[in-house]
Image (tube, rainbow, N blue to C red; front, top):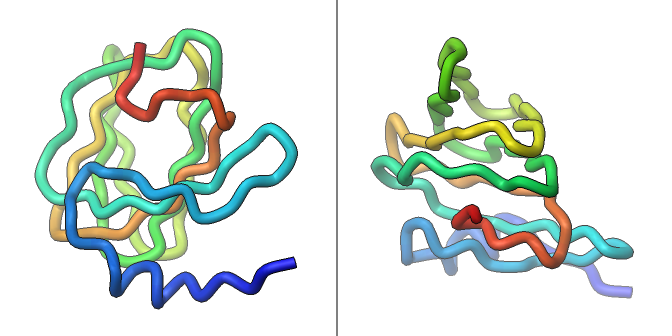
Length: 107
């Protein structure tokens, strides 16, 4: 069993939009990413994706729906098949909970 220091992982993050796997639970993975700017619209046809804002603030544009604004300590689940585009309102650190096989960049 390993103890993971999330804040140490945050200190090591330098590259925006390059998620780093920090833990695996069964067939799920926890990835940490630095969001800075906007990521292109994309979807995941076969899996939901959970976003948890650890530090900062993000906006998730959702095709055909209202935008989702998340601040520190807030999270949301984007259902599979829903086109979305995360955007940081400031450099932000986000935990993503998703299947291990999921490509975070989308289909």
